Image (cartoon, rainbow, N blue to C red; front, side, top):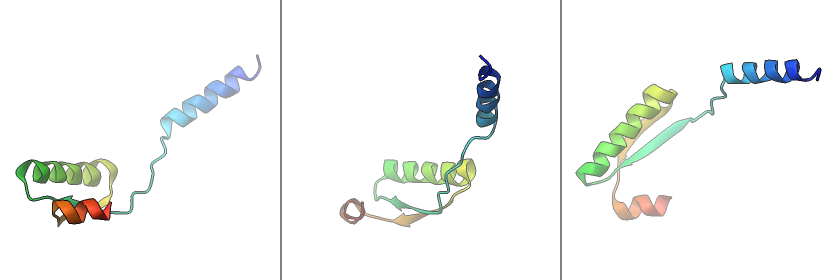
Length: 69
C-alpha cells in the first residue's frame, strides 16, 4: 500500500517528460512520380517542424532507393 503514492508520482513525472529520440541527419528520397514527391515533402515538413530533425530531400529513383534500404 505504501508504494502506491510513489508509483503514482513516478507515472506523473514520466507522462510530463516524454523521451525524444535523437534523429540526427535524415535523407528522404524524392522519387520520380508526383504522389511520392508529395509524400516526401510531407515527411520532410513533419520531421523538421514536428521533431526538430535535420532532414533534406535528395533525388532518387526506384531501383537505387530500394537497393539502399
